[in-house]
Image (cartoon, rainbow, N blue to C red; front, side, top):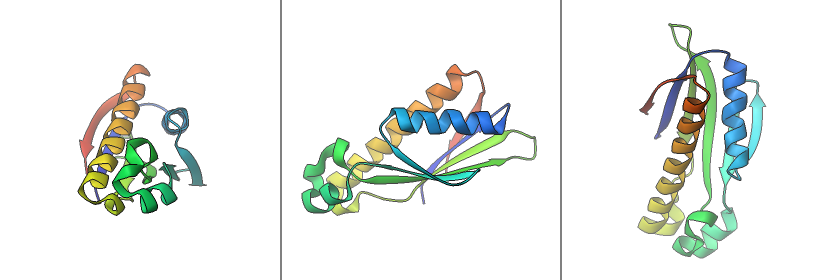
Length: 124
């Protein structure tokens, strides 16, 4: 599955809290699985299913898995993995989902940069 991986410096828990805060500020529903894993959802399943492409970017149901770990250099790795493709809206729905994901990746990257802890990011 596609996604984005951010490498950051500093305290892992603080980085995690910053990222989860960005999701909440952007109207995503966040559910913690444990200290280092969460799921974030945006939009409506019903609107995406019944409305298809008409659900629009704002109503498009998308889901990201969030996992926080460490790399061999001691940096924190925040992995965001796309779980829902937007397929219910056909090609338009997939494009809408990709736009929503990219917007969130941009928001997370900006927040990490503004906090002075951003090291790098890469597509997965």
